[in-house]
Image 1 (spheres, rainbow, N blue to C red):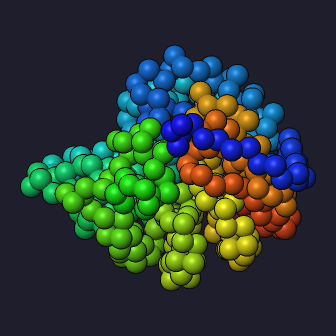
Image 2 (tube, one colour):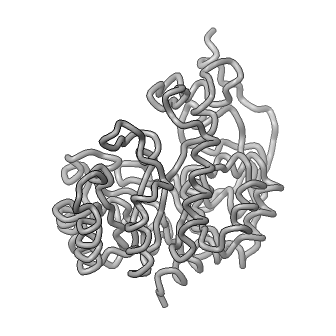
Image 3 (cartoon, rainbow, N blue to C red):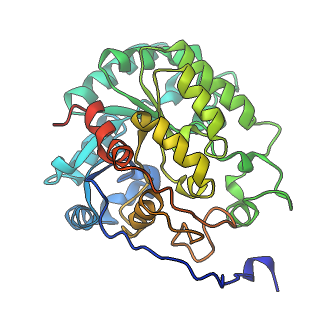
Length: 344
């Protein structure tokens, strides 16, 4: 029998709680409704009104759609969500691959000016900055590249928060061997591995993340996926103490939080005003994934599956509920979102 075929069934008899609706209306700060997750054919993949209805039934009040991009793509995205605008806050983007162009600064300013005129509420950047996009000299463009400062300054001028996915889990940067806790996941997706001497290491990317936060104190950064380091909340706490302009979301890292329930509970309570609810949801995914988040955040259930995936999701571990206080849940589910975006 192969390891991937071994799926033991626990004999523990424990309380099981199904949380159908969250304790407060939920605002999801990390969703994808466009080509980033689904490719250029996303307009044919889902019915916007039906998808919004299914999420409202799960208690979702509104979402940040991170796939606004710029100019033509932003216009296309707006047409796709027409009639459901009250459910969406669109984030835009800047094409960093144009960094070497002599008018890059002008392009950034015109892009943000147009985006703001079309209602974007923030900007999204992701891991190809550091791990994929190269400049004209053949070097990888990094998150703390000084040439990108015009973006962060313009974002601050328009009061646009930056949601930045800087690094994947540290296990994706380690050798794919018997010691890697995400071995099966990487076996299914070998292209997710960044264990390559030609690439920046996880530790180097974390240094760049700190440089970015330190050098741009007037810009609000939401560092995605629990501050890039859900496996080390003690370190994330130190960064939150050091950088007042740092926020985090919990998108796609609920499994990591749930396997360290005591540490995660203390962390969420202490930094409740700096944490945004997020899932990485896209509308071809089952909305039932929200119930797992609610169960982990709200209950004291023990030793249950944190994922709807039959293979166990991100690793061979089980979930424990954090049983967060109501005031903490209110901050994470809706309070921080409403304060950031001035929603009454």
